[in-house]
Image 1: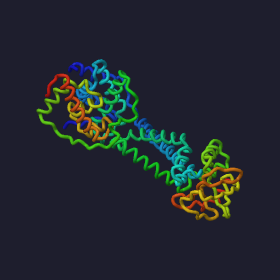
Image 2 (image 1 turned 180 degrees about the horizontal axis):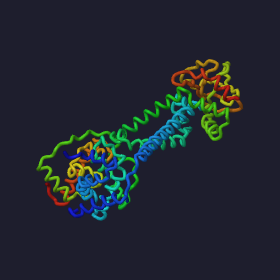
Image 3 (image 1 turned 90 degrees about the vertical axis):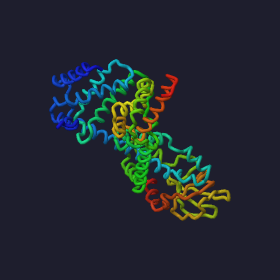
Image 4 (image 1 turned 30 degrees about the vertical axis):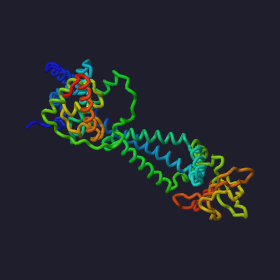
Length: 186
Length: 250
């Protein structure tokens, strides 16, 4: 039987450093795809992905093996990518994200059908880079990484209801961008 | 990224780990970090609690807490005499507390509004508790005895009456046109009541009651524009008046 990510992480914590290679093999394609979709520029992408895994190894003893490994790793990746994005742009200092200020009605997690997925994929491929980071990231995590809302909330450190709202608004904005770009409805 | 590139990443990472270029941080490092973070949260919480409860204390001591009973003029007196620096410091402590607390899942999983309200409630309940146990009164009392530098002048500067037209006094004896009272410095003052004097709670003061007088003082006499009883939590303050007066006049 294949060991779970958490079991392997636990082995690494106990000193079996070789086992970390298994985690790298399992998550490398996912983290690389996340980087490709979330980061606009290609430069340093490979270095950043490598940095994510190195940081995961350095901090592996802070991982609670009773919880899921993937949100923990994605959180490291999120921090690394957000820092990389900040370096490239002059973003104003923000204490709080205003989206998380007030309670919002939660948007239920609904599995989209094949047609909707295909339509959204077309829009995302064409306009994803033009979408702001705030909406792009939850969309990438939900549609490409297929993570549930609670895991996304854990990665982004925002309420679950905000995840739903951002995904919904992100889709709406994508549609507007697509229509403005190609002059037609999908 | 190609398959070859992906393999390269893995090779690089495994190589660095094998050669000892990257090392795992020990568990104690994370334990220490967590302990320091909790200590930081507690420290800032205590700071917010201290300043907020001190503001309530000084407003009570100076009589400003009771002046809104005189309507708009009382309210404007309160606003102009508020300790804005202390309020700013309390606000900074409170924001710092919210920022620190939001690193924990119980906070970031809820909207900011909820965690702010929960913290506000906690700080307010703590302030009420400190007020009930007369924390600042006791602290100031012990500091006066030991002449603690910085803190004693701090308490004296804020908690002694400083608003020109607001006078917290203790009723000493009643007269035909008003009453004699003792102010916070232990000096006797004569209070004159005229038909224009506002008495929002009527005139039913006994000797030993603490009252707040609005009016200008001139050579030991105040022509009262308004008089209101100083009651803390609905209870008259005269139960503790004697000990306070004794403490202050020493």
